[in-house]
Image (cartoon, rainbow, N blue to C red; front, side):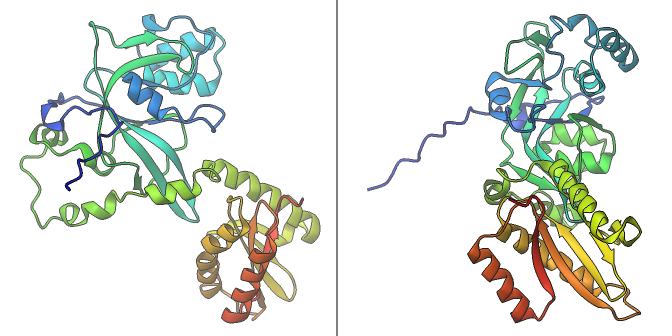
Length: 342
């Protein structure tokens, strides 16, 4: 018996071929996380057909500022007592215009020295009943109307964007980040190309690699990774601990991409910090990086090189046995350190 395909619960997206963007289109990246960095409202924005930055809760109506210059928006919001984070985000949101494209960011951080940007999906700014703006109630604040489009996300790109809203002007980055929705001739015209790219062009050959889906990886790490901020907090906390033990003169941070380095008369300690809640996940993620750092280390004095993987929590018995197995099998001076000792 032939099974009928399951109906998707996802809202239907408008076909891309129906889009005819204007030549002066702007491109933005907008974060789906709110100020607490915990709640992600991508689904609510998509279902509500809008975009929102989660700032300006005390402001009843910002419609008079829609389309004004950045300087005027910032000035008015400062007068109303809004903080830097609020007016930095709202100065972009209130300048969104019909036809602009927005990539909705799930998160962005650095995995070691590799930048990571994960995009939920894409939206295009539209007018409804002649209006762009609408003030709404929680979980939204000041919203701009939008339509959302399927792009087989989440998608990963080699960039970092930490703020709530970024305006992207570099054409190469626009091409890479918004590539999944540039599938119609009308969208290609937006890039001001005289003709379609050759089939053997580098971008055509490598498009799959530029926009690989990482749904499985996101399911594994999204509960433990809180962007780069969490890594930085752990790194600074560990630096304070090491400085107390070895002295500030012997501790360096981000030297040759190493998170932390301690130098003693007889040894060099290389620390790689990972934010994952499980020690085993930290070990698996950091091992390759530490081996590369040790291999490329300038160790003219032939000091002992110690590799330390640092994570927030203590390892379980099994995780400690795993680290011991790696130490013995690879013949490395390797250990794990819990930054938040419990």
